[in-house]
Image (cartoon, rainbow, N blue to C red):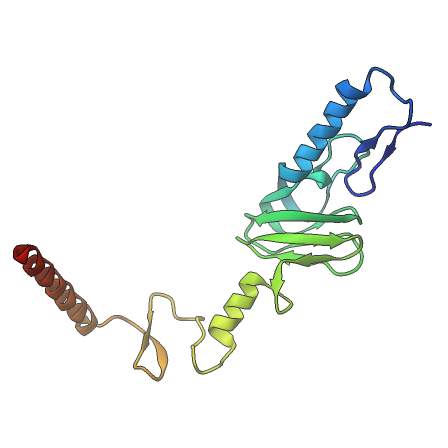
Length: 200
């Protein structure tokens, strides 16, 4: 009976009495190398937009076995992975969102600049999330939109700082009074530090 392959990582499984005197080297060593890659390997994918199907083959080298997918090039794009249980660490270095999908069922979206875990349950994909949303989306919504009125939105506020009067937070430009207060406080702190040093 010939060797068979594991369903998720496509690793060669030795059949009884198979490959006499060749199972240790090269076959076992090849399988150990594939396990190493599945636990700690990194694959850089250069995307050009559209679909990118990860290579996948029994017993051989393939992209879908990789522990980390490092995405560069052009988004938006969709990465198609095998419909088997697997966890990927995905870093999206493109300028647009990338979908990770089996081609059916729910897909996971990794935003530009995001680094997240993406899990496949054998059919659908899910991002590491909080309250059903990707962590970055969750934090953005919680910090800026969750409690409307307590924190103002960021849109159109480039170059401004968030300032509060103790009750209401607003975006504003720095005034000369703000800078003068900071300079006076820094000078006072320096004076206190010198006085403390002299007393020692």
